[in-house]
Length: 436
Image 1 (cartoon, rainbow, N blue to C red):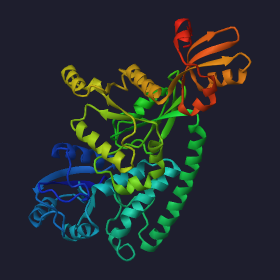
Image 2: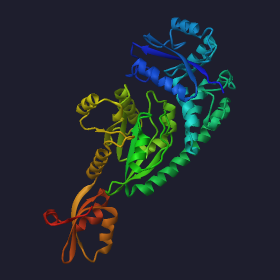
Image 3: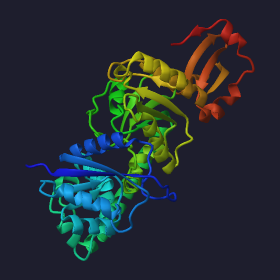
Image 4: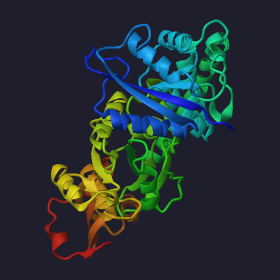
């Protein structure tokens, strides 16, 4: 099958507008924006023929781009095989229609491109439902009558649903489909919530979050000896995956790999993926993974923080982890270690620095837990059994009629053990046998 040939358009707006505009201003350089959108286009199985960038004060209401620049784009398209123009910003339905009428080629924006990639990457039934909902909500205001505009798009990017299905073009059908999708996703969300509650009583949950292709899946595999699909591509992970992380602490630790974020992540995706992102919301700890080899890694950190704020989880305990240190030189690494003193530096692929990361996760669990000393009578075997099942035993001293434990416990267990508290740790710390 012949790949679509694409022209990419980038606008560097020099005049700031009010908050709420669809991602018009970014900290990422134009060069890095071109590289990222090129990679996204390749991920959608298309071929970039040319990329044009312009400076402009503000968006043109009719075409998004100024009429002078529009003529330049028409000239670039003349006598070329380009059949698709993609803008790096979100354009309105009216702007899209006007551009297509003027340029006589298919015109899409960054949002449509990302949604298309998600549709091709979705594997689970839940992922497919969420992507279809996001695509439907994006597409609905862009249809006129019974899909006149979409029919002009032909095939390829912007017309494909999950599993290579053709997107619906009838507005009435789409509205009904949106209602149906929302109900099915809500049902899945309720089931997920029930499963979470049943497991959350005895576990500590850590979520891997970060920019797409930062190495989250590779890190999950390395830490938990799993075989989660970890490809060097954008959005290789759409479905959250949870594995047990063995740290020899109580409570048990579950580590979850989540969908990667990106600059100007479509709001339709954030809304549609609410049940998947719930894994981040209910976590006790965020492990923020950063690809240190990416020239725009600091801008990527800002993008991730913005999404985390949008879903109301920024403020949770977090560990900043800089990954792929094997891809930068020693001088740069030393400089970044000075700048980000409280961060962890690793190579998930090479297994470098993982002990430091595991130790930091342990410390966060210890902060989350309580350190207590209890004196348990020998005949209270149920309590002693409970201690070994639910608590981390730091030390133990056997006495004539009782056992003294130095414990690390979750706060929720304090009521069960409070009748056995003793005031001082000195006795148990002077002559103990360590439990490891």
